[in-house]
Amino acid sequence: MIVVMRTGASERELAGVLAALAERGLTPHVSRGVERTVIGVLGPAGPSGVPGALPAITPDLGDHLEGLDGVESVLPVSKPYKLASREFHPEPTVVPVPSPTGAIAVGGQDVVMMAGPCTVESEEQLLAAARAAHASGARILRGGAYKPSTSPYGFRGMGATGLKLLARARAATGLAVVTEVMTPADVALVGEYADIFQIGARNMQNYYLLDEVGRAGKPVLLKRGLAATIEEWLLAAEYILAQGNPHVMLCERGIRTFERATRNTVDINAVPLVKQLSHLPVIVDPSQGTGKRSLVGAVALAAVAAGADGLIVEIHPHPDAALKDGAQSLALEQYAELVPRLRAVATAVGRGFETSKVTRSSTEKTTAP
Image (tube, rainbow, N blue to C red; front, side, top):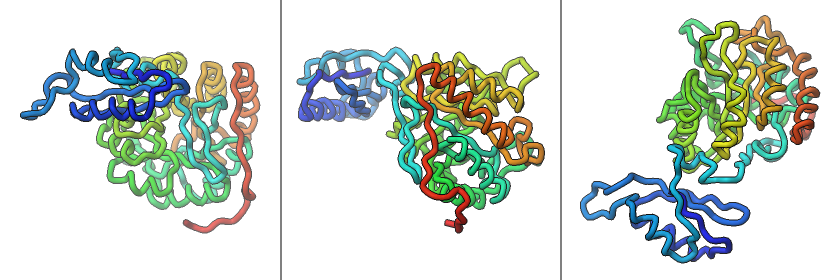
């Protein structure tokens, strides 16, 4: 349920409501809006099962809370995902991503670009891609240090060495870094180097991993599972939010359908639909979504027109020689040609376009962290 506080409710009145919830063993999540404060109430329905304990969410709880000072109304949440819903948080969430050049606002007025290679292969390859991404206005560098592979014989990333190379690229360009974390045991290590944890499609329902990145507190890019419904996707986000981490970005990266002409089917209508259902920012990955370099640009343009808050695009200095997913990676010059077209579409639909901020030469030599 949701407790809506009156406009102008005092901190003392808010504390009284939180204390009443704590007495019942319920977990409150406070969302402070422009005009009023809303409290999301989470907890088991019915008796707690602990001898002597008060019941948790019972039919009379709403009436009890509505009688407290400062409370305007108590409303049920119709969606199974509570904290991710628009009912709990009517205003769009803007996720602040730290970077060497200042925080990046994902989910605000500007479309944010994330670009880089699917997989970190070498320092030379990564820095070339990072500098090209930066020169074309990207704010966030993507690159996989740990990579899931359908085949056990495929390239599975450079591991910790790849993380260190991502940190060098961040120092050289000022770009923030998003990279995939695959197990709960790796969260601490990846968190030393990444500004954003990426949860890949195969791990969308790895609930122990979701819990762990939720506790870590850093921004999370949650990719939609290969065959996940929108409700399942939002419930996965709920795991992260329920751990107290509000900085979640959803990523539509295509789902598996009967169609075999493309790697996946990008669900463009998911972009406006999810933005109706949830307050979380929505990013689109046209590279993973199509699997074909020739389709990336068109789908990226469609995603911006549909309301995407950002794009994550694979680029590579030599796509045909890439160790992984070269067929869906844009050459650096192709990416440079695409960005002005994306900016034009963003302008046409009333959005801004986030651009890089330069604080040091992109050719500056760096040392290992």
